[in-house]
Amino acid sequence: MSESGSLKPDQVSGEARLEYRWAAGGTTGEFLQALRDYRRILGAVCGGCGMVAVPPLSYCEICGGDTDELREVGPRGVVTSWARVIEAPQGSPVEAPFRYVLVLLEGADTALVHLAPDDDRVDVGVTVVPEFREGRSGAVTDIKWFVPEG
Amino acid sequence: MRDAAVLGWAQTEHRRRAVGETPQSMVFEVVTRALASCEMTIRDIDVVIDAGSDLLDGRSTSNRAVIDAMGAHFKEEIKVAGDGLEAAIYALMRVTSGYSSTALVVAYGKSSETPARCQTLALSDPFYLRPLAVDALAAGALQARFYLHEYGLGSDAPALVAVKNREAGARNPYAQEKSPVTLEEVMASPELISPIRRLEACPVTDGACAVVIADRQTSRAASVRPAWISGTGHGADPYSPGARTLYRTESAARSARKAYAAAGISDPLSELGVLEVSEYYSYQELMLYEALGLCGEGEAADLLASGATGTGGGTVVNPSGGVLCANPLVATGLVRLAEAAAQVSGRAGEVQVDGVDRALAHSSGGLAMQFSSVMVLEG
Ligand SMILES: [Zn+2]
Image 1 (cartoon, chains in turn yellow, red):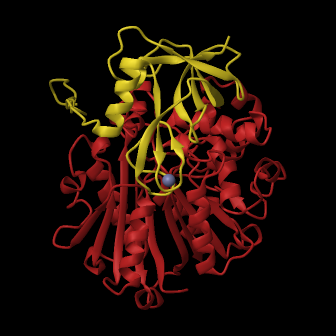
Image 2 (spheres, each protein chain N blue to C red):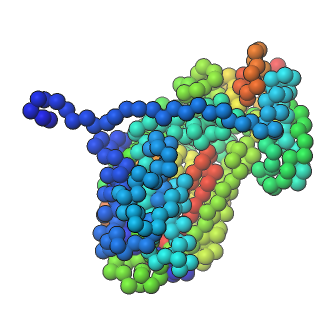
Image 3 (cartoon, each protein chain N blue to C red):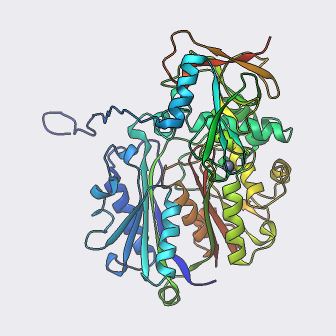
């Protein structure tokens, strides 16, 4: 403390904000278009190992092969894991409480990370279906979340 | 294999918020102390290999502004974008290839200066995961449930990891969390994202670590007892959590197999006295028992309950208290190396385990332990 009684500054504040325009690439672009325009979920069929990956990439995360084609999967799927959120994190597209889920869609070999309502029926092994939003924008959040079937 | 050794190391006293410290001042402190710990000066160092985070520092190519504090000006210097243990593996390659005789490894992280969960949300890709707010905690919670469900375990099984590590951390002068907790306190702590509770998650930490690695000739001539590096391994799993068999961490298993083959280890449970592993969440330590070969798949909870990995056990895991007691992000894995080196050379002070001939250091990175590194040390 100085004679004037003032405090030594112990920090400065600022922000590093950058706006991005991330190129979606052909495969992801097609996936997002199918969600927005047709309410369809596409998986990537690997030309190397035949695995169907959701969400799709232009290459295979398992064998390193090229993606041969995009194929519709689901819409039904089975929950393989879930986690309950009581306090929504920053940027969360839905209000808490909700659940994160891993969903293995029919016809797919890898699981999609997505959301579900905080409903005790959302459990491992339960069949769920997507609930699409109105006014879709071409984003993975065009599916609001997956809800228990029936 | 006795081609290289860890000779010196230092870590900060890890804190929730290091008021009055900059990344540079923390780095300068640990570099100075690490060199002194093996009776070297910066002039004895051929190359500096460092790990820092542009995101945490809020500055691109973050090493540029920290280079003088590391003593790396007027020298060769390389930045590794990952955990400090990955930088140590790079240093090992440098000294075993004959390209350098000595390497200084530096890692630091000041997580207190930005919102903690945004730091790991930035690990998520902008198309498939980030719009859903999937950060390290969310991915970890999905992995935790997957693991518990696969083996029919209750959520009290990983809670015991927190009890064990907080008991150990209470003895560690560098730890941030220095108070033991009971199983009841862990179970009653608030759910962050189920099944992970507050006391089962790593704290937010400011801290740094530095390690000196040298070739055989330098190590043999050293005035301190070397911690010989007898094996290492590093690897990655697919990026998408849903493309992995989430109840296993394959990259850690592959890394360990490679390190054990080099070190001549066939039964890690009986041949390793100490393991220092990176358990950002309690369940990860259980998964790592299996990946690192201490037990078979699905047997980790029983191994933990037997006391074999706790204080007084035959294979003590995280005698430092582990990541649950201090998580200086980016430096976290390098701290594991410093602790393991201290154990095999009898310099671990208050957390020393008796008669440790061999120890293992492990780091992980990415969502749900996508990346793994392992190093085996011998006295
Ligand atoms: Zn493939």
